Amino acid sequence: MAEEILGTVLEGRQGRVLISTKATFPMSELPNEIGSSRYHLIEACEASLRRLKTDHIDVYHMHGFDAVTPIEETLRALDDLVRSGKVRYIACSNFSGWHLMKSLSLSEKYGWSRYIAHQVYYSLVGREFEWELMPLGVDQGVGSMVWSPLAGGALSGKISRNRPAPAQSRVGQIEFIPFDSEFLFKIVDVLEDLSRETGKTIPQVALNWVLRRPTVSNVIVGARNEEQLIQNLGAVGWSLSSEQVARLDAVSEKKPIYPYWHQRGFPELMPPLV
Image (cartoon, rainbow, N blue to C red; front, side, top):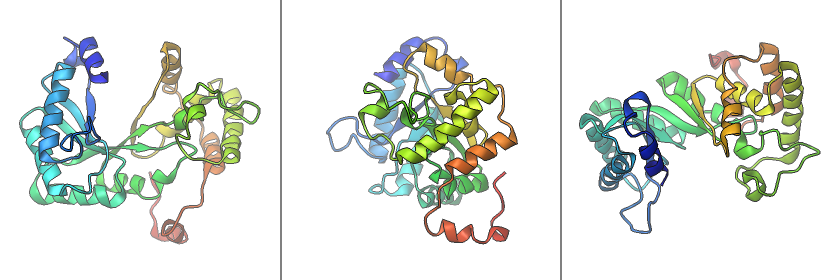
């Protein structure tokens, strides 16, 4: 339905926007309407084109890694879609480091289209992306499109030590993204301080921090209404100072799991991310 609505809104304007959509996750309970097989990808792409009322998709994402289908089959089918003109660029989402690296290696081996972007979860309360996927993106030139940069609304400014999550909010209804409450509150404390210092809202500060990070090409914001969308758009056009970024870095830092804590013990062997 989202594609149908977008297709109606953009009818006659397709050349003025970049359209991105996804495949892989199930569209029904039928066995062939899930995954990244050649059969499903071609069928899914044609269906998306019809719903979007366009002749091509600018960025086509694999919404998750399909460990059942051979990677070669997926990439060859995507390359065929690119060569046919129905897809301009391919991207992935929620891949592990080896998923993405093996895919890039096979694309290079066979001369197929390569993933140019990775849609990832990344926020002040969830920085695991920095451990492996961000360095991989820097090394391989893969941009990051960040989903849920406000952690499912946890960094919307509506939640703090003295303000529990509203029952009707996304983060109040489900455990959308796991995090420790005290860890969140410490981050919100700093965000509140920076909001006063900059004159920006808490979500604008949180989004600005994400937008400054290496490999981040854009953020995907989920606005409930026009007011929220306009506020989120106010995250660009200005920058936090280096000192302010350092304060957010410090309060949101998590000790990484192995082998990353071991690797960080030898910083002279790990070039900084720039």
